[in-house]
Image (cartoon, rainbow, N blue to C red):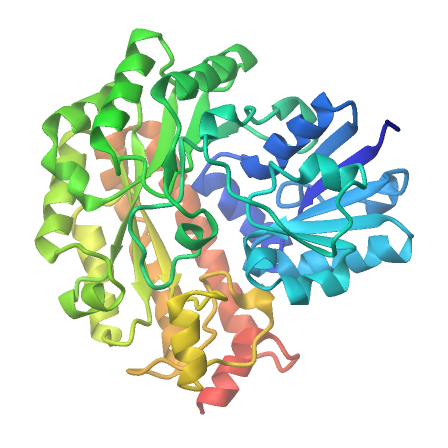
Length: 454
């Protein structure tokens, strides 16, 4: 077998490459890397190939330095797919083999293949070596899902050539729930879980590598509460507790006092919970399977256990108006949420939401780059696209006030308070940029939204 040089690139959209966004993202959390390329890179490295992995979010990349590579592999989400296609076209023009995979390419492979030699649909572990070695030559490669996740190698962070201060861990794939706007529950299907012992071995590796921060990237780490508790106990027993560990959870974790105590003791002390809306009709519309009372109980339980809540709300649901959005933001302030993640409802390809809006002729003619949960890509039912875009920036500015930082100092300490002050500054800069762009007639998305709404 001939040794092959393979470069993995996780592209970043233009807005995320600007200095303000990079500043805000570094304050919001710790630099990290998507695990997929690091797992696939490990598989290829063990086969004898020369592999490097790059995250464009954290460094400006000089693609001319990659011209000695044999294969360029690009990971796509919808918001970075335009950039991925640009990079793919560039390397194809240099006679390099280009392979594209990831969530977006898996949803629209016929589109992605226009910018690549091969497209991988689904989880690539079972086909990546044969693609790299030319044993699979199909233009579009449909990869079967991995039945036993314990058989997958751990992400190899020695391959990563861009900054990273937090290790990402996927203890499961998929989600037992299926909200209408969710892509991961459809990309990673069916829902599968790794064994607690396998997870512990990965965490032991990251302790040896010197990581102080970890992100559990499961869509819902606490979906199986008994399994989550077993992992947490083993983390505590084996001294595998990190300075801070982030995870995704649901409001139903508030019903288990033992789970909350273990989360606190294992330093899983920063959680994103999908509150989505304080309108029960909206929660039912998106198939969230939670009640307003669940949200209130969860917020109180997390604060009691000193677990920092990142409150995620969705803006623009068909059954929500502007007052509903403001009520959700005020609720998040009143429960002393550590951070707010306002997400504009985004119709990703192949989701029920996308199919609904296409059928109703409500999609705007926007580039994929704007499908990043920060830009309006459809015509809402109860407000104009411009009004919804305004509500996003108003939510950020309203939540991240200077005065609110002092509450965070009080509840969560100095580091958390300083991070909140940084996000206040980033929100001011972001709002200023939005106002300038909306008045500038240069074809930017915000000005276009303003014009079509008038």
